[in-house]
Length: 243
Ligand code: MN
Image: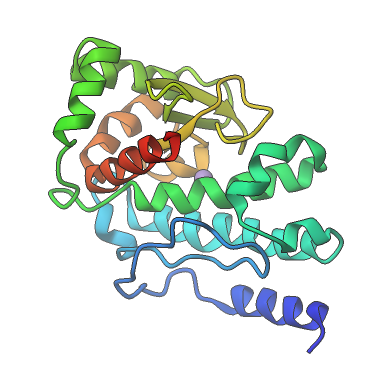
């Protein structure tokens, strides 16, 4: 089967999916997202699992339409760019400046959302920040409360659309940053580069159906559904990657 035909079939499969259909409990997506054909990772919980912080309809559209569009676009772009069909996404992001804006937007969008679904969990299922992470947060930000305020501000003050991030810097320290559009801290175009361990989507599509213009209310409620188990795992992996 030709690559183009395969890609066309993949795109059709994604389009045919009913975004409002319930998603079966799924395994977490693999740590390294493989390049083409790009696939939409299943949500690790049903659409309604994050209520009341994030409503069912928002999750259905966000995952089934927005994230799916990034995946479909990437597969179309891959047909013209052999580099997009090789290696993993984490290898492509640090050289994103060499690609056209469409690749930057869609590759970032795919990576960011795949991570975003993982760093959220139903209320009461996300565990707590590990002792090691709490210690690093205290050292870097003074206290957990100050960390939370700074991170929330990074999301609230991001003008227009973008993301807030907790990252591990090359020296192993934690930092908070934000990126515009679908950029992320793994990209060579990012103001502050590091390995992301927590991500918050502050695009209007992430909250507008329920919260309208009240981004701050969305961010406040979102803390209830942070999956600290996954954040801890990513923090440990980021520190190991430094050695
Ligand atoms: Mn989004």
